[in-house]
Image: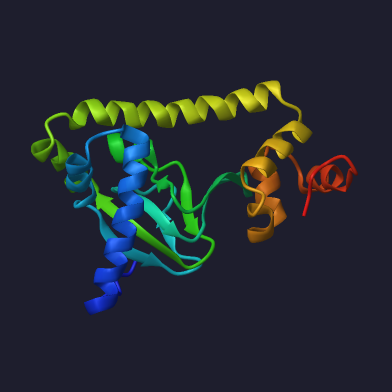
Length: 210
């Protein structure tokens, strides 16, 4: 589980650093005035996760949304004793089980720290209270959720319209460092292919690789 561990000068410096990154990310997603960004960011609190800790687990209820400052999280599910990786979340992005957060349904995904991680977290109660201090929040929230579904639609489109090699190339161009940071079987699963297929693709002379 997450563990708050900051105190004194270090905590203050960290909060200044992460609030800046968080505010920049909120601005990217919502495009709202700086004062309103600060109001939203003030609801988030710092947490750390050690490698192997779970942010949320399948079957439980996910009651929080976190901004990843440092580290990597794997989003996955166990299907018929086989682990299927949905995504690897990197710094600068939000993590949650969205349907569980919004509707209080059992979480579909396991979200686990692949490395030691620093995050900024807002719990569901505070998330729901943003509207009290920011009247236009509900409209902004719609934009955020719409972007989440747009990203999901884009992923579905790549699986329907691209070959395995094209999906590999796209991910490599988007985040080539990821191939050095996580086990290849996680990347293969995320791309909808077997590790053997990923290995064959990476051996091709025309394919970019490390």
